Image (cartoon, rainbow, N blue to C red; front, side):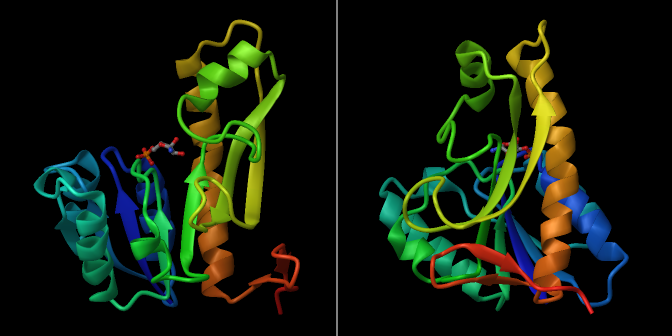
Length: 202
Ligand code: GRF
């Protein structure tokens, strides 16, 4: 299966996926695309021999114009799946509707709690004792869409947002590659109730 990965900068989730894909003949990372110039993630991916591209949001004052060009760029790689790995931009239906069932995001909270930004600050402020991350199919509504997988971490008494973010990120690096493995093996389906169901591996 062919995957295109969209990133915003650091790209540590993307790195975890690329490392895992290296061991797999059935997974090709067709491209890593960033909306920022010279991001650490694209530099790293290029060093690994993964095709990279930049489509800079600052060149497109109108969001829909950006999304139209991003759609065309992603389509040019003919991906089976498009992974939003820390892609910190809201995508309009112009983009999202072009990849039905193919678009997968990772969000740093246990959805449906804490959609949007600053999830770790808000988890601490609300006093939750369990936090985590969610990988989900993307629909045009932000941080909605069928949940594929979640991983949990404890919130510890002295946590600040950075400490909690680091703990969650460690889980992100495990759960996103695991989902890519399942996607590559066609083990995930969305049923009539819009819930993700897993097939038994053979
Ligand atoms: C991750 O925590 C992701 O869930 C969030 O932004 C962070 C991106 O990290 N939305 P990286 O670019 O994958 O290192």
